[in-house]
Length: 265
Ligand code: AMP
Ligand code: MN
Ligand code: MN
Ligand code: MN
Image 1: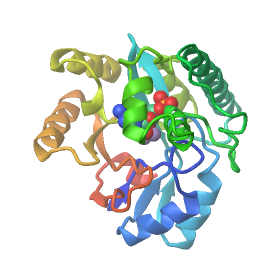
Image 2: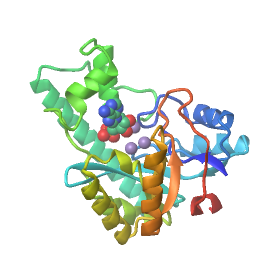
Image 3: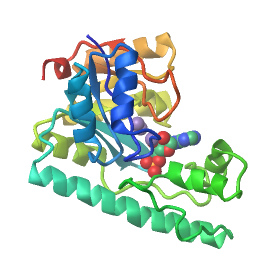
Image 4: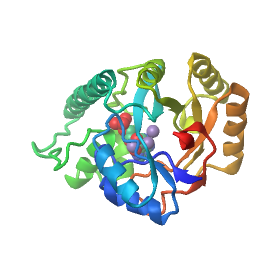
């Protein structure tokens, strides 16, 4: 089955409505999709309704921000009960932490002379604030020439004003996804900023803890990298998923063959 299991909408740091993204997925040949916004499922019902009307299989999804020893670790959740009270409380906690973390970033930026207009983050849909929104606001206000410059200078983990999303460990994200009956998949493992030995050790640790899958097929990664992570997944008994991590670029949505239990949900 062809599909894309890693997609963002404007309910997190994507730039498009969930329904529009589903239309794009259909055009790209997807037969199965999941909307995986950062720490929110606000776009889920809109995406599900559109996907079903287009004849695409829809799986509930989310991308949870976690942190392990200062490393940003993203855990994708699939097929969970989106109405589980415990899961909804967990998501609410993540959203609250995002707002607090944004306030800490604003305070750090203020010390560097960067301030925002009061309405700089007033959105017409209930978006969860991320570093991307802050980079965009800097560009809109003319403080930085473009998104990449803003991100590199102020928001990257090496920046003096960086504040991690460190509310939970990846193990907690795995637990919460499992408690709601879902599968937990490590997002873009090749992007984890550790040397290869430490990265593998972390993945082994999470696999032993109960991680279910590895996103070995990701955006534009080289086929050698896909093979490397596919082999690692096989060795650790994890299934493999594919995701384009769509935020806005046309053509970002990929149609890739899936062969994992999510397809059978
Ligand atoms: P946050 O969830 O607030 O930590 O923001 C992370 C998001 O920012 C990621 O999901 C990406 O969409 C985006 N991002 C992370 N690193 C970069 C980067 N170096 N350049 C541009 N965008 C990035
Ligand atoms: Mn993002
Ligand atoms: Mn991610
Ligand atoms: Mn993502």
